Picture 1 (cartoon, rainbow, N blue to C red):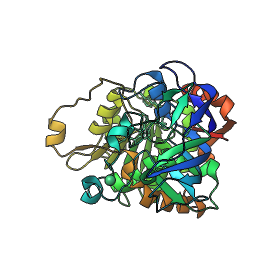
Picture 2 (cartoon, helix red, strand yellow; picture 1 turned 90 degrees about the horizontal axis):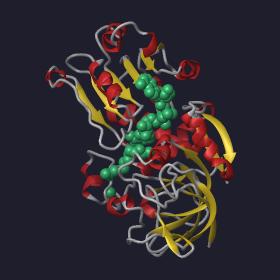
Picture 3 (cartoon, rainbow, N blue to C red; picture 1 turned 90 degrees about the vertical axis):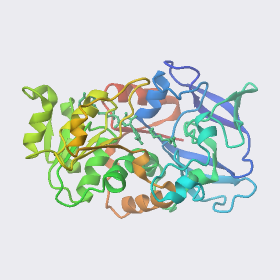
Length: 369
Ligand code: NAD
Ligand code: DAO
Ligand code: ZN
């Protein structure tokens, strides 16, 4: 079938809106009509060429929501008409990662997903007879996409696509990092580096978890008001701190953060986030994705004296199980998504969403089809 898609032909170039061909779903696959997709920093990271796994030409996008149109042979858990959120971290419930109880990083389709292909090693998208690659197993910058069954979370039908698409990445990543990865407890002091689409969700997760002090660190003063609305209790602009940021934060949190979260992707702030943690027990969670070839460093004594450095992908969430629950939290008014979606636009204007992100003018832009 013909589908409308934003195609990434090469790194550093804007997306082009084109009609591409999409084959129907094969065994274990599902054809989904995408109704809405968010544009995340990670799409921009891949498009920039900084992503070591970035492949072209490809159809990017990993934060979508839509409706099942057709299922391939052997698909049992979904049927046409089901509402779904595609998952860039699948949940097969059978691989040794899934059954370990220790991680959300299902490996069932890891190799082919990383190569921009479906599990059988081929692409369903093509343009002029030449294959166009999938991205993160989701490719939501198209009005129809094909996704493995294990990479789809079934959600309730009354949830608005243009809001809950954000649960496909940013919301779950931020809230999940607090609840699944750090397991923040009531009364904890939390420091969040970067108050963008991920950091603001860490803040609302910390509030949900009952954190006491929630410190937000950002160079952009305009992020302050929204962060306060989401639960930030103290704002720190590093440009206005005299001297080193780390001792300033340790002093502010009366000994150091119980938990810190790096939501920028900068190896310098990753170090600051670790070192502002409380001696003996403070845990720092890396969420931000740093550019290809970059390395983190600290003095090992920081770890010897009890600070813990960890990382998290998709907030440690097992998507088919937890994404429907997070949709329920939104529908029950337990979490706020509406105020984070600052721009809504048609597919034709998707490059504007990237501009707004680079200019720091949006939190989340959503394309509706
Ligand atoms: P964003 O651009 O919306 O937000 C980043 C924020 O950091 C901005 O508000 C910016 O002003 C601030 N900032 C930049 N440099 C700073 C500095 N030196 N000090 C303080 N503040 C600074 O990005 P986002 O969408 O929130 O994504 C954040 C990171 O998370 C990205 O690296 C993204 O790739 C990554 N990410 C990771 C996962 C995961 O599963 N681990 C999932 C999604 C996104
Ligand atoms: O299993 O090796 C693996 C990788 C799974 C993908 C995790 C990606 C998370 C970080 C990228 C940000 C996504 C928006
Ligand atoms: Zn698995």
